[in-house]
Length: 318
Length: 286
Image 1 (cartoon, each protein chain N blue to C red):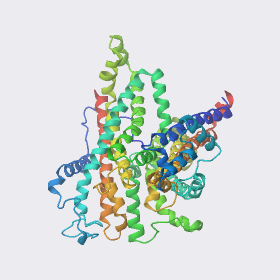
Image 2 (image 1 turned 135 degrees about the vertical axis):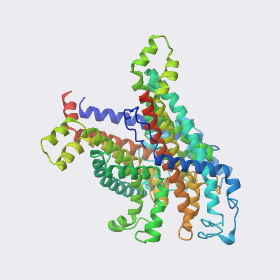
Image 3 (image 1 turned 45 degrees about the vertical axis):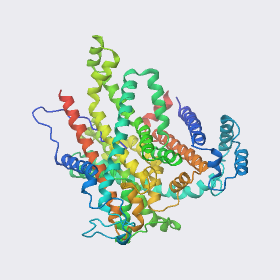
């Protein structure tokens, strides 16, 4: 199977998953308790005439599958309808807020990788050492403590007591944003670091016991070079998988982090839309999230080929 | 999130398994939480929902050990009462998901074939969407309370259990004792339940404990977002959200519940890690 064929097959699988998900997401409207027209009409006055107008406008009198086909037809063209609350297009709402969430997720991932990978390598090559035990203990704590609890602890120490960082808002311009986003990113990174650290440690331990590492040591290759060229390269696949999942799932953590730090990102948009029963926005966000998760996984799987020449040769040979 | 699933060390019969002080400290934390949940009615210095607007938003004092919230409710009493929703929901999530996961994992892992494919593809689909997001949407839109949140989390947590139990069962299936049981005419259900299940028990138990932690974090996260538990009820996650505005007046109103959730979660994780190590050593030693 060539690389292109593999990629095409994966994209086909993604499309199938998206199709099934879209049915579930659209089914939400039908499953909601009460009259969908009343839900769609939202907080505005619901006179019988208004209800009839809403039914007419959204085609609620049509059979379910006709409605679904129309929704999918629009969604494929990038039209997820309008917010029933503000009247803005769902795509505009998402586009306005995706920047903040992306900033947060990428910043947090950079912090996570910078801390977890070197520490995981060190812990994995010397299991049982002081570094290893400290890393395991810290990862146990940050893995178990909930994101929002960590967030408020950080706010209390660094914003209220020490007054070093702002406790809310996203800031303007690169350096101001960096400053504003530091506490949120550290909060998000805390839990992620634990996951990536454990994966890196386990992967390194696995590689460190192989014969070629012992042989490399026997050839008096420096430990730094062994770490970079032998351990990191061979341990990189599970680490990459884990990092990809973290980026995709970063959106989940972002819901809580954005809420703690009052950031106007996708997470706060989701919580607000759910509270307002703003269904078109929720549906749009759900599809957007799923697409993001699936695409991240695809990119990670394709990166395997870039990282591992053995996989590349196998792909070309067969 | 994955548990630290390390290969079981080969048991040395001469050396008895030690639980270690950390394990007992963790058991102590859980025991204190259970005690608080059971006896809060008698030991709480104040009625957890009693308001006292004169003493609102105070820091710690002799009267109110951890101060009060905006409505003058005693934080210490509310922390004690918070142990109830902090324990019962996650417990139901862990046991429910553990039961479904173990049953499906045994079935798919041992039987394989079409059942396996259908269940595993469904699970793949569920992995495409982050579980907490699904919980937020479902609980929020359907306006459900605490128990709907618990139910949703059971459904969302079960796939992880299925995967882990299935993998453990598939490893066991190839071992000689299963073939031996089959040869002497033991039925598949009996083999799965009586022969395979006891051997994957360490995995199952460790996983149920891990699911408790996941359930606790998810339920308190939902409560923090105002979903699940009823407004005004003493729940740790909800308390963090309610008192976030008075972080400068009485930090304990926010830090207290945050620490409670974290401590309980860390304690149960520690117990899960140790139980897995010790049980798998014992199973290996048999």
